[in-house]
Image 1 (spheres, rainbow, N blue to C red):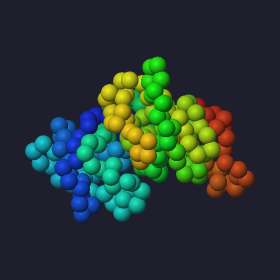
Image 2: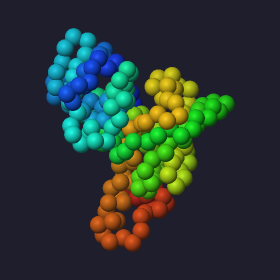
Image 3: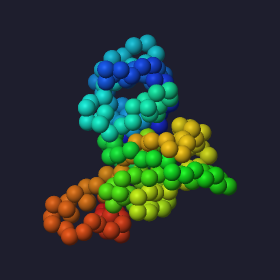
Length: 205
């Protein structure tokens, strides 16, 4: 499990034969789970100044390989007793989103991210979402997109400031929203849960 708080911005050394090699200050152990741009991966090799992880077929069927060049976000999995911040993140990317607009505000930047319509039911206004491994708050949701307002600190400490219109991003929707929708669908519910339904159930956790 992760929390969506980036530990470090690492550098991609190479990516071929499903193996991603990273240069980083963080030193994991062999077999550790680590989120790279929000994708939970397993450390298979460690060397001075970096490590390697392997990407499974399922992972590669979702992600944009161009997002695994240059710089990437990394976050090690939580250890027992770690301080819990951000929100519950599994490292299981649902889909790719596309940056549709970027608007500078007085104290932040608004990003509109478009996603396949079927995932909108899992995106809750004022709820949490993970973009390239970063825990963020959703400000507004439309039929096929959502708005994020990114504060200067987050812009400075992550790669979000480098996004451009058309940039593809890894999107992990809210864990509880996905679970609730799945439960209702399998109970024969006639419609998807509303945002109010999801917020009420989340409040129980």
